[in-house]
Structure formats: C-alpha cells, structure tokens
Length: 221
Image (cartoon, rainbow, N blue to C red; front, side, top):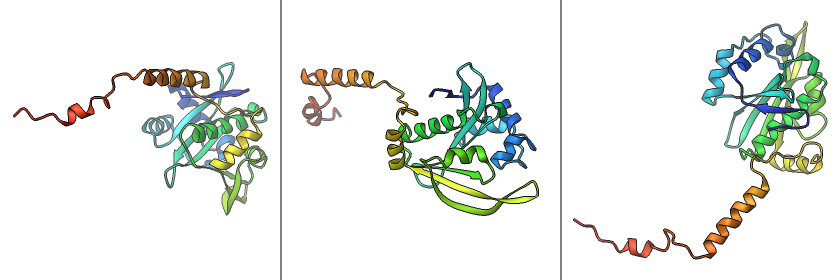
C-alpha cells in the first residue's frame, strides 16, 4: 500500500526495535499517543503482531526510511476496528506522512477487509492528530473528560470514527488526493472474468454435468 509520500509495509525485526524506541517511557511520541507510562518492548510488539492480536505496519518513505507505524485490531462486533499510530521521527511530523498513513490504513480496512466501522482515539492536546481528524472524514463520537494527565494538567480523550458509507463518500470527494488502493488491478480481474465466461460458454465438463450419474450410484458392498 502506497501513497504520494509514504507506504505501509510489514515490519522486520529491526522495525520492532524502532517501535520500542519511539514509544519508550518519557519520549515525546509516547506522550502524544497517551502511553507515556507504558513500556512497550520490541518482543511484545512482535508477538502481538504475529498472533494477530494487534496488527502493526510500518510507515516508510519512498527512500526506504522508516518514520513511523500504524496498527489496528478488531473490537466489538464483526467489521469494527480500532486503529492507532505515530510518526516516530519528529522531523516528519508536519510532512503530511501521518495523514496519508492513516488514510492508507482506513482504506485497507474498509476496502480490503470489509470493515464497517473504524475508530480512532486521541488526546485533546495532540495538535498533529487533531489537525488530521478535524479536516473531515472522521466523526467525533465522544469525549472522555480528564482522561490524560500531562505537564501538571488533565486533558480529555476524544473518540472518533468513520463508517463505511462515510468512507465511500470521502473516497469520491478526495479521489484525486487519496485514491483508493486496489491490490489486484481492475484490468487483471476483468481479463480473468472474461476468460472464465468464455470457458463456461463452451459448455465444458463440470461437476454439475455429471451429478445425475453420481446420484444414481450404488454402494459396492
């Protein structure tokens, strides 16, 4: 999955160590994600990813540099997901990579995994994430008052979501900026279906043709 500025890729062993570094206690990145008091180890992240409990994908620049990560996990009923992420390299915080990486993940969940609802939460003091969520697409669902404590003050936790019909509307509106990502080209799918249609039109032998014969078979003993 790729966009103008970045791509989402499966992590390598070195990438898990990067995630641990970005989310270490007292780091600015962990403060922005609201996880400042939690220690996340590379092995814990890898185990969660490989078990499917939480899926992690790396955000990579076109030059190959890893600058952040996104994650998703199933929650609630079928088709509902919670997502998260962070750009770990502070020099890339205002580059647009965060917004593109978030949209790529939403695109993947709704366009490939048949999601119906995607949820994202963020602290009210996180200006980088707020600048993305308040531009449209996501809908504010709730506010958890005084959820985070930072720099001697309490701050709210905000809960946002996007539903399938809202994604479809946004996909049309922002098609020129964030085109929906197809894993298999439309031309290839069309050619496969045309070949299959031509095969069926030739009245080929199929399991249905021989059903009557199979239905009248007698046991040999």
